[in-house]
Image (cartoon, rainbow, N blue to C red; front, side, top):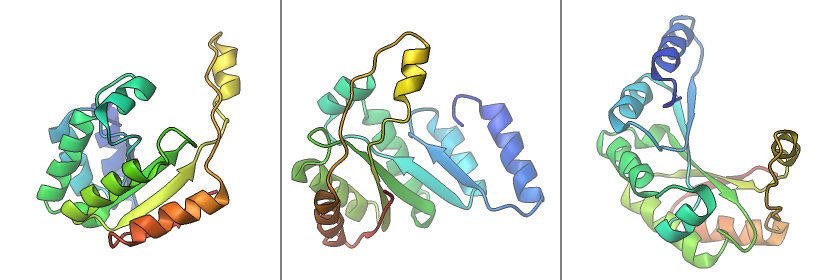
Length: 165
């Protein structure tokens, strides 16, 4: 979306003109002004948060999370928080610890965000990586019990949680 701004905005405009419900799916890593412009037109914003600690985020994604969190802050400040659904791609032992989840809950409370979807890790991209000659580290999803604990922890911050397994 943010990597192809002209196309994304044109597609969004055509979809809305044709009465379609539009969801933006974003990591939040990109031009904040563009994100806000597209977000105003969209019905939903699916916003991924991978790790709250910048060092962990850099280690696993290759980029800082500062821009991502800043853009999320801007969306909330613009009054768009009701459209935002925080998505948490979860990897066992990487970002499913209580510290990370509590930081997500605190951020959501601070920004008045109320909806989250838990996305347990899956290995669907492994064959694609191998197909282009890259090896990808293999991870594990959190257990069902851990996902329930995470959901309960976020509920304590006033967050409505959906688990996608």
